[in-house]
Image 1 (tube, rainbow, N blue to C red):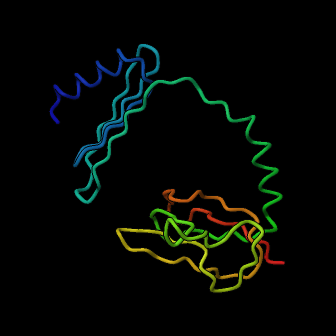
Image 2 (cartoon, rainbow, N blue to C red):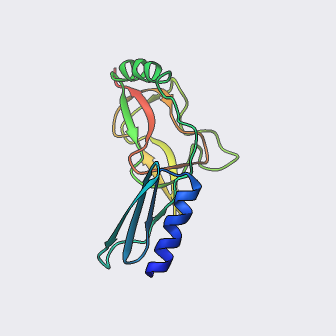
Length: 160
């Protein structure tokens, strides 16, 4: 990226009203911060091993999350007595072995160590997720055929 392109980017950001823009390419990282009439630009050379990424924030109304905080806190205190079974891989979670078969587990069902709880498909490989604990399924946190991330909570189990 040459100097003229950077100057054009600065002018564009200043006119757009965005407060901050970060742009990362193969070997250059640019951060443009605006505060009123002044514009600050930081250009850094990145090591060649860095993956290309691009972030362009869009000016939006501020999100107020204070109303949700007490509800989340009360859920967390209630759920603290339960064991959370998390996804060991990234993929798509299926709660049944095939569309015409029943679910592996339901809320209220008692499970033992080694019972199959779900299947996670990753790159066309279907991985059975087995329980590492015994107990009762209290809550299923992910819907059938939903994408899941590594270490994402899937089930809450009451070990008693």
